[in-house]
Image (tube, rainbow, N blue to C red; front, side, top):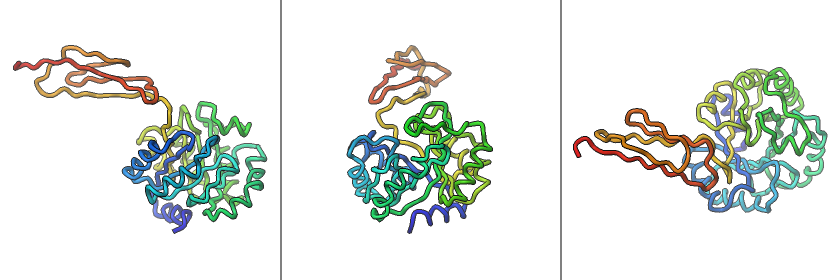
Length: 288
């Protein structure tokens, strides 16, 4: 069944979709296999592949490995005309409608049109809107275009309406990779009510609660990115001591430890990629 038909049918039924964005530059075969397995376990609906910069030649191999490992539809998320792989299922034909860069609005599409037409992929014309996430993004730098202000709901509404009337079949609002703040539910709610096409929301979504609130506000698809070789922020480890155990002391390799009753908590502001942290808790038992 075509991807777009599935998306529109889910929207009619009020069903939401979950997508994972995979940057080929941030994965190797072993990490990609693990990511695919986690996606299967989490019942991910779509896998998006691409990024603002894909400097490796791993795109085709990345898509082929995914297709060999699962039946989750693979949709390309291209940042440039050369990010096209015939092995995928579909392609978000992104037009940066939030900026004023003619090259990303139509110029690159003219260059890529023959290759895209011959690819056999399902083409999904998408109005792409970058929203200020509190941190500079690669797409803003490359496009030399400012993101939409995060507190100007009316600008986002009018931009999305224009995109739909220009024939875009999807609207994708993105706070960008590394966003310090996600798009607000208020902006999503107001934008979702002014057009009929499916709405995709991504960037800065790090907690399940935020994904739920975005869906409740009107998002049809939630996109989260693969962690890649980045540090993990705000890591928390909790150890509940068994009945009869009395806390004596602790030792942690990093972070801050707090003890409340029978609960010992280790909080780490940032844990580097492939780094480890150790928490040792010493106890004695009342009947010892």
